[in-house]
Image 1 (cartoon, rainbow, N blue to C red):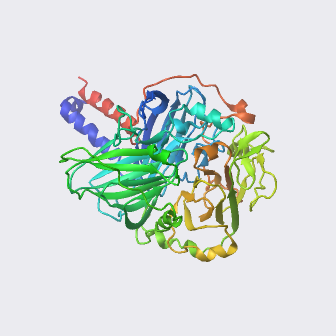
Image 2: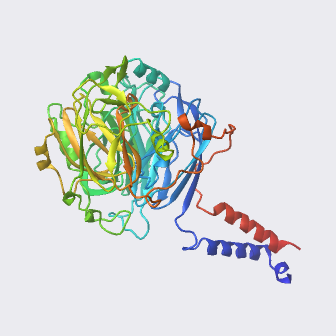
Image 3: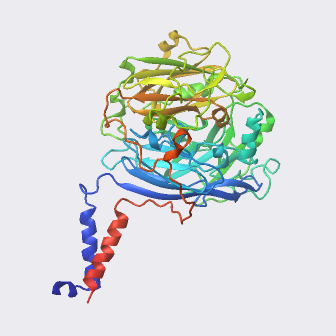
Length: 599
């Protein structure tokens, strides 16, 4: 071993690093892993000037950005430091073959207070802008949300030049009341009422108006350089308010929404509904005589008092000569024009000439030529009283989650947990509370029509899938409405709006085995029962179309006996991703260095 003694410390380190390079070379590493440790806890904040308890992740509100690349594996260890159970769901991440990680009550037992649970999933074959949030107990009203960026692999071209910066912006209505008080109000049959304001990245509005905005509120400032182009990823993470988003004097080139590259079009403003995400390219092509307003204001309200439900951030050029002042840029002037926002939504189309997660163009999937195998018309009405409780429903059924998650009940062949008789058409009788599922046909092609007979805009989201938005119009949907469908370049996404007194139609290919949540993104409607699950089972007995129940699965309800108790514990949490094998390689490097340096 004389050769070992002759190596200098620098040479020993170089030797160890060389071994690390060999071990992480392509072919050995496979798809990379990213590890995150999150401590979800209450922190004190005053986004609208009133101190309150919000939900932070590692002390951050909003939570950290998850920035990964197509096909990466995510390992997210969540420590629940709240005083009640918690689940995190991944809005728009399709969880291929893995509904076990979906983070909703139909698939997961909640993480008890003081416990931790580790999510592990792959962002398989998708790109784009998404977000995560707590899915139960009305907790999203207190925060706990953050962004997810899934980048293209280097071998897949992006259909625009690389921007000079990437900016995530969370917009959403906000209440000064504690989320538990809001939850109690809904339980007691009360409406939430008008929000207290709109937040941008967890901060209140810039004081553009001394009457509407009190002094001392912290606002968000986006710093930019003249002549540069930035990608803005904007998410409406609010409770129930549709917002119009705009940047004063700047065009917003729409390039992506929820995992699909879009036909590139300039907008001066865009309506963004609850749960939706969009990417814009914005070029800093204005002079810098002053800063510019970034605005998100309430839509589809006609009361003058809603003017304070407006979020305002500042776009600041590096050579700005002064603060923004004067009136905000005008919202759409369409009070008497119901079609403006709908036509704007219809203008968002799929970019058929670009690739995304795979090399082939997005449009190579010709959804318009596939025969539909199942049709569901889902009707939403205003809340009703069922068994003395204020509830919402779809097709007359208000969903009530069982104590045992649906997917676990299937795994252990439990009977009587749910039924498979969800009505395909609106229910004519009295509404009821139940847990009826949609029985989806594996590899079938399902048409779903959302009929909104409520007075508010609703957004609907489907976990596990991207669907094609093929049509929307005012009035009642009929069979003849299919004649207006876009069967060529309807955008593929995971959340779609349905205007009041109108319908929206989507098409979805049921190729992802599992039990998947279809819900209202409007948090009050969802909390009161407006959701259903789609059960997709491969009739062939194979383990190739769905991953097995994870080793760390939590058990509750009828399966509580299988759960091992966990000692509540705390540890220092980190939001930084660490690629797989990193810890092992560091240990190997230290061992090699110490071995080479031994006398």
